[in-house]
Each structure stands twice: as C-alpha cells, then as structure tokens.
Length: 425
Picture 1 (cartoon, rainbow, N blue to C red):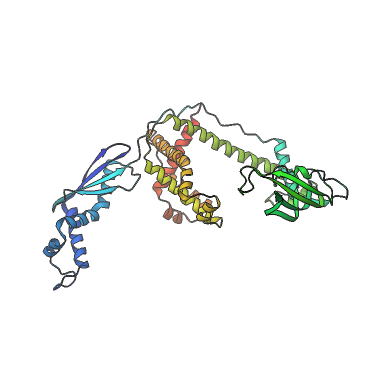
Picture 2: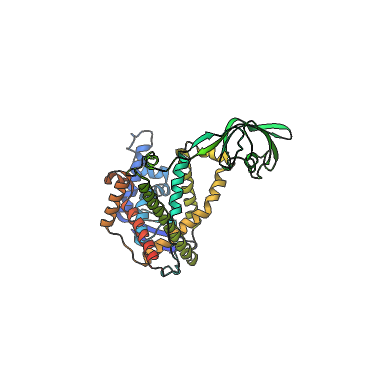
C-alpha cells in the first residue's frame, strides 16, 4: 500500500491510500464470495452462482465499493502510520479510480492541530506558601465540640440569643393568604444558622417561651418558587421551647468518640488535624500553581482547535455528568427538569471548560514532543503496580482496561508538567 497526505485548512486534509496487488485481489475475492453466499438465483444452489453472473447482476462498481470497504481499515491504519497522523475524528471515505488491479481510497481526515508554543520554561509564577496556625487547629477541636454538643432547655423567661435553638410553629401568608410549603410544626431552628429566609432568624432573637410574633420578610429575587420571589410575606410564629447549646469538655474521652485510627488523645488529634490541614492546603496550593502555569502557557500559545475536538470533549463531559447523577440516584432527565434546562442547553455550559481542557492537552502534548520526553516500559509497569494498589485490582485486570500507550501518554504529560514546574524562576 502506498499513501500520501495533503493538509488543508483547519487541521483537515486528504489521506490517499492506493491498494493494489494481492491485498486488492483478496478483498475482491472475499466480497464476491460473500455476495454469492447471500443471494439466491433460480437454477443455482446458494454459493454456486458463477462469478460472471454476480458481476453482471450487481455491476463492477458496486463490488468495487464493497471491496474498498473490506480493505478500508487496514488501508487507513497503514496510511496513518506512514504519515504519522493523529486523527481526532472518524474520517469519511471516498472511493476513486477503482478497477481490477487497484483502487484509491481517499480519507477525509481531521487531525490534531499544530501548536505554536510560547514561553513555557522559566516562568515567573510561584506556588503560594502554606501554613497551619494554632487557631486553625483549635477550630477543628471546636468542630468536634459542636458535633457532640447537647441542647439544654433554657429556664422560663430567658430570652433567645444567637446560637440558641428555638422550637417553633410557623404559618406563612402572602397578602393574607397561606402559601404552600410555608408552614411547620415544632420546628427546631438554630438562630444564626442562616437556614431560613434572610431576616427571619434575626427577628426571633430576644423571644421567650410562649411568645407569639409576626415575622415580616421579603423573599430573595432568585427564590426557586417564582410566585414568591421578591415578594413580602408574614410568618405567624409561636415559640414552644428555647434551648442553649452546651459544649462538651475537650478531653481524651471526647476524642475517642471519633474512633480515629491511632488517635486516642487531644494532643494526638491536634497533630493529626495539623498534618491533615497542611496536606490539604499543600494539595490545593499545588493545584492552583499548576493552573496558573497552564493558564499563562496556554495564553501565550497559538493553536486553531478543530470544532470536533470541542464537541467530543463536551459529549464526554455530559456522559460523566449523567453517570454521576445516576450514582446519586437521579436520571439526567430528572436533573434537567429540576433545573429547567434542555440537554443541548446544559451541553452549551460545558463548552468553556471543554475548550480549556482540549487546549491544555494539546499544549502539554506539544511540550512532550518538543522536549523529546519518553516513558519506558519499566515506568509504565510501575504505574500499573501503583494503580493496582490504589484500586485493589490485579495488575492484569487493569492492563485489560487501560492500554499501555495511554499509560505512557499520561506519564509523559506528567513529566512535561513537572518540567514546567521545576523550571520556574
């Protein structure tokens, strides 16, 4: 097989593969046999119809078309390998100059675009310093106290304060008429939690057990129930009980309730949380550092991304979205209905992120190529082993799911990113 590649505009072009010799003869013979075994002709048993009758009945052009389809995949692979193309979409096939001895297969292809890189080494971008203060650790201790706090009934006559819990009945009305979802019985509301409409909780500070009070509020303009959005409403509130939050003493016994592995004392808990916070913030700082670097590199690079690459990325993001929703017990249709969106409308919201993801991949791939970054089989095997330990799956099972070329491509990208990060000023 011989091939030629002609690049046209916007990363599209024609890959022409000429198939001749034994490969073309075998393809024609295979098609002829297949057709003979499928058709019925009066006076002949199936599969015994003479070749001349088949050719006359179906015509040479039709049989050439079938033979071209038969050999197309091998021809495409040969042409792609010979011209070192990276296809980003399934090509369209056009058959030309077909005869008994040869055929030209013209593949209209979209390939990965050429990237013109800007500066990507020695950038003046830095990773933020990460610290964990004693106050941060004490806040973690307070969170444990909050978790195991008790609500203690206040004495009669004591007023409610922010942080207290009021147990209330309430009925909401708009223009004197009750509205759906605006009533509750013996509802425990923590003042200052901001769990109710803005202004509602503030007006209950100072109430006492047995009080009745009209709370006047205005619903937010973006309230989910359109008939109430931006509207004033009156809630008639009856206070049954007022409870104060009683925090437990910070001691080893409290910490042991958490049942954390190897953490039995207050001091051990503090050290554990300090390390956990530091690791979390280091990870966040590293992610922000990488993002800032990539934003700068992408901004300085030039590439004309084919629209099909963006479309494919959007489709992949939508599929991930539907899987996540199904994992949460919802269908994509239910989410679309709840958010008043269409599938196409939701996909439109994915476009900016899809563009950024595609551009990032193209830029990193270009750096891999420019820096001649390679990944050895040994490195790929190490990655397989690491994934096996991470996911608790046998290495061979992971290999059956993830091709080694994909592993190597991912590792090469990581190496490119590490090179960028370690080269900063």
